[in-house]
Amino acid sequence: MPRLGVTRIFDALVMSPRIMRPVESTTDLDEGRRGFAARAWQRAYDGLLAAQRERPLAPQDLWRLALASYLVGAEADFTRALQEAHQAHADAGESLEAVRAAFWLGQHLASKGEFARGSGWFARAARIVEGDEGEGAGRGYVLLQSAYQSLIQGAYAASTEASVEATSVGQRFGDKDLVALAIHVQGRALLRLGRLVEGLAALDEAMLAVTSDELSPVATGLIYCSVLGACREVDALRRAQEWTEALSDWCERQPDMVAYSGECLVSRAEIHQRRGEWGRALDELQLALDRFERGSGLGSAGPAFYQQGEVYRLRGEFAAAEQAYHAASRAGRGPQPGLALLRLSQGDPAAASAALRRALAEVRDPLKRAKLLPSLTESALELGDVDCAIEACDELERIAAQWGGGVLDAVAAHARGAIELASGVAEKALDPLRRALRAWDTMGVPYEAARVRVLLATACRLLGDEEGAEMELQAARAELERLGAAPALARLEPLPGRSKARDHGLTPREQEVLSWLATGLTNRAIGKKLFISEKTVARHVANIYGKLGLSSRAAATAYAYEHDLLDSGT
Image: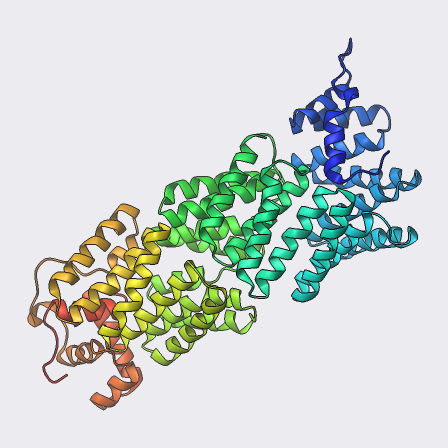
């Protein structure tokens, strides 16, 4: 067998004249080969598997069977066929093909959490390359694995160096899969080094090979899913949308392909959720769960369950959200910050804050911390702990300054505006809130835009601009009603009319507490003003929320101004 790159092997398998030559009678092997050439993966799998039951397959057909097995979700047959292909190539002295088979076996097993077996196959590939004195494209695959390993271990400079060298080897030997895989690993490592522009450019270059249909199916799917993961990691929302659409097109052209389709559906669902298309998101997620169950199993479905929880939480279906977050946790995807935000929506900011603090204590990676810090800021403000909120927001802004652009910048501005508002400095809240609103509107994220409008309405009211406040609230209410965001709607006070003090049911002490709360004071500061304990203030705040049907300090502040409940002494 000539020493070809993986992509060229795939092309040779697809275009082989032996596959396409007309025959008088069709055997299982013929049917499998024809299905493979047409990328009808189920047909290819059925035919090749049936042919193997009759007699041993040649190495080329073992590769076909391995690829078809993987793509239809028959992972046990994939592993077995690739092992047989590896052995056949090794027996024939075809070291390069044996190395490639060992590399893909190691990758697959490691991705399934079988690290010891995966490591064994990587070590075997390295030993074969050493036996060949490190010559040829096989060395590039060993370098590629080293780059992957360094990336996982956080040695990003070493990963970059190894991936650059692997790219050079792939280019020298014309191995398109190796080149694209190495460039994409380089991109991920550069992102982790904070070199955002260079990293995204490398990912775009790898995706150019993918979308040009230059690669084998297994490399195509791996790069698609990895690049989408990187885009989500740095919140490159527009790129994520673009590459998700490309992945969707690729999957739809191969309707019986199970591998990668679940990940594609989860990515599409996340885009729908961001756009406020929550019903479509849930439909996509159910399809994704069905695909995972057919393929790698629900143990790989953690992201799908988590996204279900997010949509259910936003719609106010709290029991379903709780169930989904717990399913995500069982499948290996941590439930935070979604579960903490659920507790916040249920009126338990203390539980939310505790869970987020615990999660942050376990995370050192800045981008992972950036996913948790906005929720900690929000829960801290609900508790009246402005100092904690400021500390979390400061860290979030530092991370955004290094990896920001788009979502991270908007989240940081949103948090800063909320803190200024809670601190009673409404005029300083306006600029960050306006920046956040522009960013969410530009990115087409209506739910977050509506949340910012609620804060802007409170700021306008505190500054005496009743007309501006009402306009912001009306815009927010209209969007939240369209989305079906029941919990967020429940936090909005009625726009028309003003009730007087005698109508709200608050005791004189509760009204005093509300008056001071509306100035932005923390529970501790209110206690000092009124000569009562912080615990007593917290009990009064809980009573105020219950009597007024509110669940946040911002909503209570807006209610106090809207209904003339401020004490002139404050």
